[in-house]
Length: 349
Image (cartoon, rainbow, N blue to C red; front, side):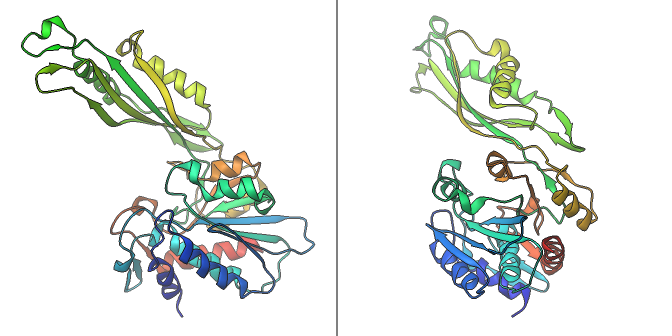
C-alpha cells in the first residue's frame, strides 16, 4: 500500500473530537504488530514505547481528532490526499505509524503518543488525561508535536487569553433615550478600540512572535423599544511567550483604558499558556539542521505548551501547510509526507 493510501485509511475514519474510539483502535492494532513496542491504551489515547537500555528518550506525538466535517469526502487526486484531517494531522499520523511499525534498532528509546480531543476545550485534552493518569508515559528528554508546519520547525507557541467584558448602561424607553444610557453604544467604542490594535512583535531565541487581539463574540439588547442597560463581548488575545497570563491581562486592561468604567466587568474566561521556542536544546537544534530550513515561531497555540509544563522541551514539526488546517479543502501532498518521513527517521537515529 502506498504512503498516500495509508494516510487515506486514517482520513476516511470519522474522528471528530470525542469520537476517536474507532481510529484509536486501528492505531492500537497497528502498533501491537511490532513486538518491540510496549503498547498501552488509556481511554482513546494510545502510547507505544520502546523499552531498551538507552538513556535518551525521544517522543513523537499527534492528535487523533479533527474539527467537524465529512470524512466520507476523502480521496486521492494525483499526488494529493484531500479531505478533512489530511493536513491536520492524519497525514503525519500515518507516517508516525509507518515508522513506529518498523523494527529498526536505534541508539535512543522512542515514545509514540496518539491522543484524543485536542481540537476542543483544553480541559478535555487527551494529553492532559495522560498527564494526570499515566504521567510516566509522557516522560522524555525531548518531543516533537506533529502539527502541520510545512516541513519547517515552528518553535514554541503563542498563549491564548480569552476574556469576557460586560459594559453597564441605564435602561430607558427608545423614544426617550436621554433618560438612560445605551450599553451597546458604549460597546461600539470598545470595539473601535480593539479594531485599532497594532500587533506587538517580539523576537525570542531568534524567532519572531506576533501577538494578536480580536473580538470574537458580542451580545446585548432587551427589546426593540428598550435602551439596553448591559452589553457584553468576548476577546481573544494571542500572547507571546515572554508574557504570563497576569501580564497579558494587565496589558489588556490598560489598553482598553477609558473604555472601561468602575462598574464594568473584565474577567479571564480561559487561558492556555505560551511556550518558549526551546531551540537551545541539542536534539531540537539537530532537527532544525535536518530540515535545512530556517525555523519560525508558531502562530497559534499547540500542546508544545503542555509538554513545556511537563518539563519536556518540544517543538512543532509535521507535514502539510498550516494555513490549510480546518478547511473543507485541506490536503497534504505525497512530497510533504516523504520529507516528513525522511527527516523524522534521520532524527530518531
